[in-house]
Image (cartoon, rainbow, N blue to C red; front, side, top):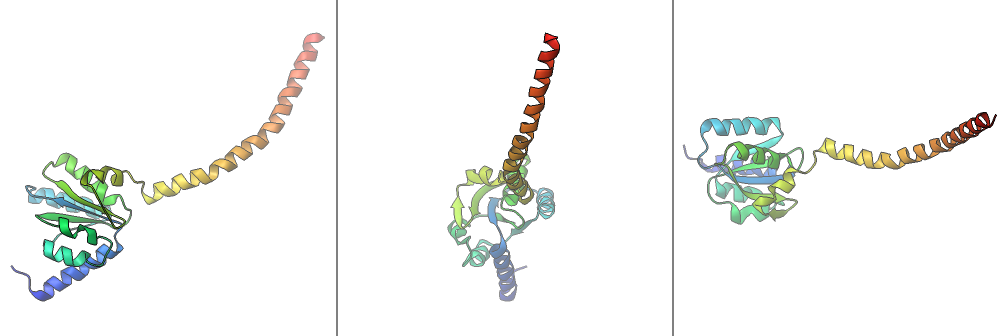
Length: 176
């Protein structure tokens, strides 16, 4: 069934809202995937906080217009599925990379992050970005390291005194 103008406007406005709040976008060609494989991809996307949508390229071009993903417009050709990372920047890249390992028909065509188009091979760099929790944990480890070293240094002074006293005691006992 063909979409009328009102339906197209709804799709464009919904996609534009998602694009405005997304951290990154991956566009992949899904030609050759079965309905079951696409259903599995959608299921994985929902569980990982990725908005996944198959939409006409002309509507997608209008939706990303005025967002930081406007740089993707020339590359939106062919049957594409768009994956928008909602929670963390690497979520869509991890999803697409993982799914492409088991389904070779899914081919990543466009990768956009921070208003820049990246090469499709750069999906690995984006997929290896830490999640929010991992980034916080790394930051906390870096912030905690100087305090740990300071505490070890302060603890070393009485420890050295105790070892020196023990050495003197052992020396006196050996002499006697």
